[in-house]
Image 1 (tube, one colour):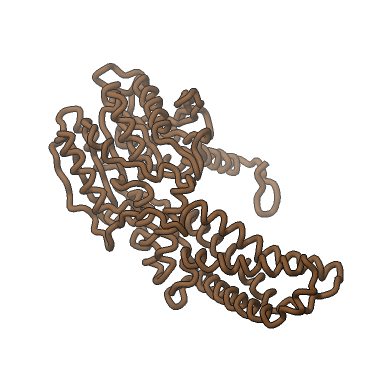
Image 2: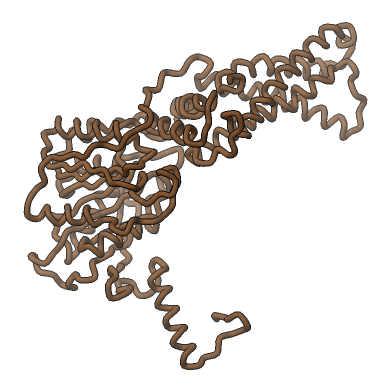
Length: 489
């Protein structure tokens, strides 16, 4: 029961009207609230829940948004265009694109959005071919709708979704046209490296992190199989597309390497003999064509007032004439993307795995066994150098802190590096200082151990093994830290 500030609402006539109005508002705001297929307002699209089978029989849940003026039963001449929206990378719930779908539906286009599959799609695994088949299943559903002209159903894809819809278009003539937002012409790994570097540069970061994240991290993750579809090449796909294409990039796109991507995709369409494309730069918006408060480096979830207006008009015109090839000047990039080099031996997956494990074992093992001895109140081994404790503690912190911070930047797309001091994020600077202290302490511990050779010879075997493992960890930590930029300016 709804309650007011001072207790339950009374059921007076004015209050009843207020409650009715609030319930009506909730029906508009909550996805799926109210009766399926009910209009949410006189000028709003009609929303209908649908389920359909995607690739491999996976059941996908979607929402069809029908224009408010669409007749319930349309003749062939009254049927309008349809559009399936495919989101970018990430979980991709249908609510993510619902506002965009409603904008298209208000402009006369029946639109379908659906929850991205969870079976076979994750942060470390995905298959664009599987996602393309899901998109085609959605196209088939929309083609069967009574208000939709079967030969006027197209696909819309954002960012990663542009790779999906372009691939789907090559697999079926059911796709009548393509609309893309922030399409990338580079491989995912190269594009992501470019985007990471741009976000770090915008934050004022200089120095080794600008190599560790965009270069080393991307190459190591790709080689380890933890960067899904890292080497996917979209160019051969675009070279097989013959449907009309409207490809758009925000003038403030900081993620798609838009200047390069627009040129690559245009050249691929030209090689395909496709003369029915429109390449458009949308002023004042970011990667997903939404508004921006920080020159494209933020992610507010707000649509421009005229969102989908130009796109819907382009789609409607396809019924009478195909577009001729045209292209706006592409958005300017502050820096070009770089081809990613092969891994050097000390960057290889096997070396990174072995070195990380051995360093962690040597550093953390020394610290943990020492802590266990103190808890048991055992005798302290006087022969072991005090500096070894510093090396163990700071080495463990540098290793885990460095990897943890890089992983955080990967997961957050480098949007939140934190405060920057002397061209370095404070966290990265702290990790670098820990790494220097660890190696310095290990050198001191090694020197002390040499001076105390006689005393160490009589120490328990476990203590000698602990110290040996620690010094071995420090020796391996040196090339490891160099490869990740912890010991570089």
